[in-house]
Image 1 (spheres, helix red, strand yellow):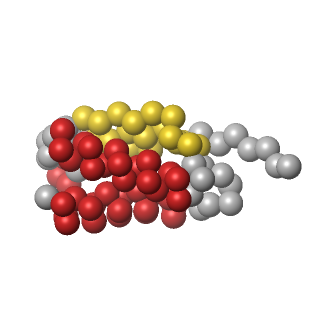
Image 2: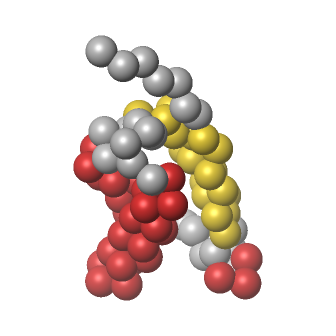
Length: 85
């Protein structure tokens, strides 16, 4: 049995730091973050959202490249926002 303990604090902003995150967008982004975390066997510790940026505290197993997880988090949320709004 392997043991790992990796914590990451991710932050990303809206395009041009526009204050674009409202309650509806926040719900979509939260749902996406938890979905991507489940796909990568990751644990979301906290999510914080401001009108122009997102914070995520997450633990990701070392078998997953962090760049792949970040790409999935940002890409999937952007894709869903484009289709649901």
